[in-house]
Image (cartoon, rainbow, N blue to C red; front, top):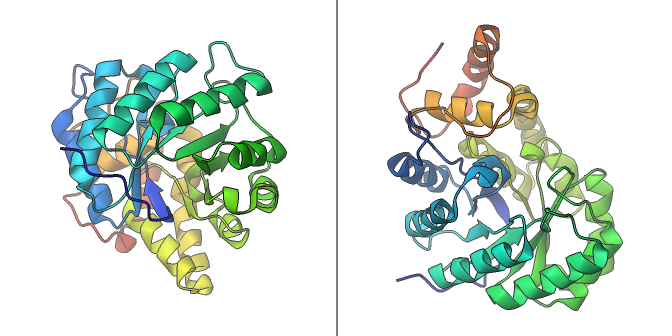
Length: 311
């Protein structure tokens, strides 16, 4: 039976599990369960899936249902689960939102539909319909194209004020810091919180501006959790030192995306293969050697110790 959604405010590290695939590029459920267990054990304060880092555009409806069910099961009510329901059309997104709520999700998150992209009036109607279909809190994901439709702080704040269940924002469009500040100023209590993205590369600034959390891919969730906890306990000098240690990997993943998320999780023994469906840059032998060096430097910060694979 699905658990009742929690009404506690969302705050902290909301980690994004990858979607693991086997050698035939089929969804690998045992690895999926392990990666969500890893997030929970690593100290994540929430789970967000399937979204961009989960290769959601390559997944079937049945695969998305499975991911939703597994995420809620493995979180076990310990931490909130936010289900990604973005899709090409409003109708498909609303269907996913209804199913996520029925399965016991704590919230849903979506960019506006993107085939075709909607104008601002269409986006407002979409979030109204999404909130009605879900009946649970909704995150606006403000992201750049080609899939995302960037929105102004004024527009996002207006949606929060006018649609009661639109309560949270994931802000990762251009000018993130200034948009966090402006959205919070304009939305007031109608916005319960804004989380940053982009792997937490700008988290120190986002936290200072009032961000309630961050939503990065999960390959170093145990380190991201430490970073958030240091910030939230006022240990800002230690947080800055840790963030500096994280940046080489965060910058590398900015270049390679899912390839790095999965390679690190495979090296850490969490997923069976690093294979992906989403096209993109591949790591060559030199890249893997550099990743070895980066991880050698960061590994002392890992709190989840697992068998280690090197190139």
